[in-house]
Length: 191
Image (cartoon, rainbow, N blue to C red; front, top):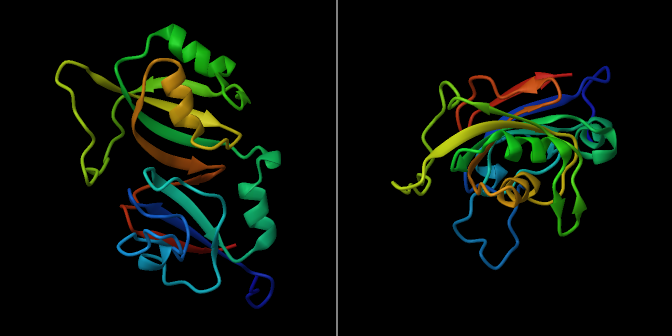
């Protein structure tokens, strides 16, 4: 990783839009037309500290500091990650308690999560394309905080308690918050 001057490093807070890969290049067979970080973050020598699925939105951190990258991304450091989750249906207290205790998935029991009902987050941007809406089924929002990172964990946990995820936005990683960054925008910090 590249170092700047007196040991200072770059940390990028990026609001990853829906349908953007959390990498700078796409070598897959579907590469043509898929957006990557290179479409949005023209800062050299930074790399994602963790991942955010292509169909998820929100805070993604990038840095040129390998130690910081590992601290953020490695589950052994147990850095809290906060998500706003739009669900199909309205979960009752027993479903939220299941999330709080941990949910058994095919790859094992998840660690307990913090989970609470919330109103739709203030200043939320419209998703493009919009989520599917079913007039006969309401939707609701919860906030979840997890400290591990199983593949598609939030989506699998909410589905396991009977409430499929319609939209997933990461709002915070550790002390770093999405704030007022709009999709595709980033903020560069020197740390």
